[in-house]
Amino acid sequence: MRMDVQELSWTSMWTAWLIHTKIRKMFSKEIDHRQTNCLQFIVPYAHLHMKILVAFDFDHTIIDENSDLYVRKLAPGGTIPSEISQLYSNRGWTEYMGAIFQYLHDNNTTSKDIHDCMLEIPLVQGMKELFDFMNSDQFDVIIISDSNSVFIDDILSASDLSDIVQSVYTNPARFSQADCLELVYYHTQDWCELSTVNLCKGHILDSHIKLQAEQGVVYDVVAYVGDGTNDLCPALRLKSKTDLILPRIGYSLMEKLEDPHLDIRGTIIPWTTGQDIIMALKQSMSAADDKPHPDTTLS
Ligand SMILES: [Mg+2]
Image (cartoon, rainbow, N blue to C red; front, side):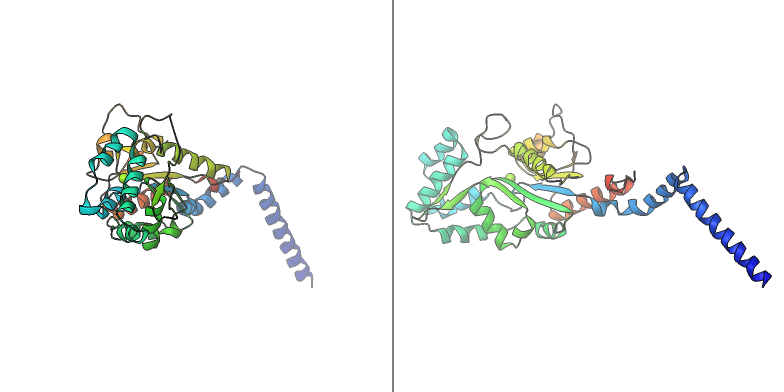
């Protein structure tokens, strides 16, 4: 019986010592060591919590044509009269396209003809795989384009990409009651010399990021994918080396980015196919494994 009491006593002392040690650790510097050990488990999965914004141009980036130029094939003989072509230099691209749509309408082109014409345009190689890859909560995907909402909606719907795209920023368009396609400026801007008067892509990108931040969504990485001269402005808005500028190889944005006087802060990764962009995003995500994500900081 005495033995049992003694054993009980030892057990109690052992338990008390364990509790004492646990409490002491909780209030000592050893807690930092414990937190470090926790981070060793958490940090390898930091990329799972990353939020990445991928902003796309549309023409010659998602699709392998310029939709505005492609639709001209519907004109009689596939040519546009010179008086309409002159509008481009005199009043800008949006007026020029408006005149083309009116010309097509005057020559009996229907909305169905235009919808069908858009569906002929192929996606850039690997673009479908890229969008499938980005189809998760980890990515926000937006499009910023100087095309128009009808063309983009047609092609995204036909390609089953609509649900993956969070927002499309482009010139609003619709068919009138007479079945003529009409479009208006996305906005009217006078603050950016790199952009056309109807669309400053950099301003739109900044506004999207700001709006998301106000709603509690902060991006760890911003990637901009484009091909043309009007993609330079958003490319220059990227703020850190972890952000990605993705210019399509063989197109004018690549040349523009070679200007040594530019203040380029993002990392430039040229691409040819959607698979190249998947690789770039995967590298960006694995690079995040090397540094703790703010969410993993215990304080
Ligand atoms: Mg383009």
